[in-house]
Image (cartoon, each protein chain N blue to C red):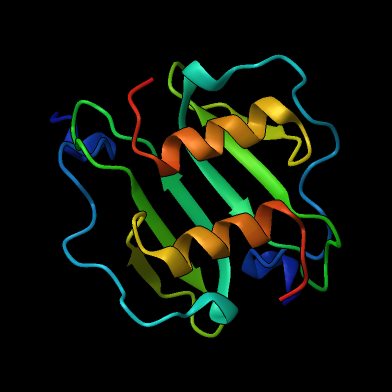
Length: 76
Length: 76
């Protein structure tokens, strides 16, 4: 049995990130800190409409604002 | 078939939040913005050790710092 078959990720999950500001369409956001399998922080947003998972760029100003807005509990 | 049986949450997921600063033990963090089912932002951390899910207080200074550190891609 491999680690992968146990659902353990051994690499980065994001290949490309969404460039359009889709903050209003986000249902939830997953933040995955850098770890031994991926040296970059990964941000994966789940969309309200269809539950699609989209990777976001932690460096993008609009992404930082979305996270800040969620943390501040501000309505979208 | 109820919405709940489809995995749709109709209420807040967090009952209580972790008060101890457990930043170093976090594998990933889920941010759930306020929505029609829960008027508060919810933060659910998954622990490295056992995959346990723990709710964090979005207002707690140490929680804000953990999120900032992840966004800045700083090693723990």
